[in-house]
Image (cartoon, rainbow, N blue to C red; front, side):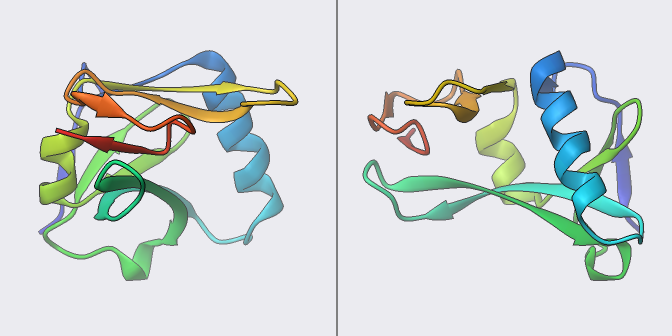
Length: 118
């Protein structure tokens, strides 16, 4: 059975990030999509953030689903350990714009902000 968590303090999402996620989600499939956020080995600092949309049938029973107002985030348990308390923001700056990960668990972040070390 897939676990459902409240959005309280697990991963915070700013209004600008919510807006951009909705725009991207509407460009995708007509099926119900979940936003998967995870952590993978690699990147300048050792671990990288990964985001993609996921169909419901691809969600594993070990994944956690975090409910937000108009969508859900899916996260595997291992990644959730590194992402707990993180804030996801979005800026449209020409240089350095895009999704920004503000992670209180990271002791080092690379210059692009897409990889980190704990």
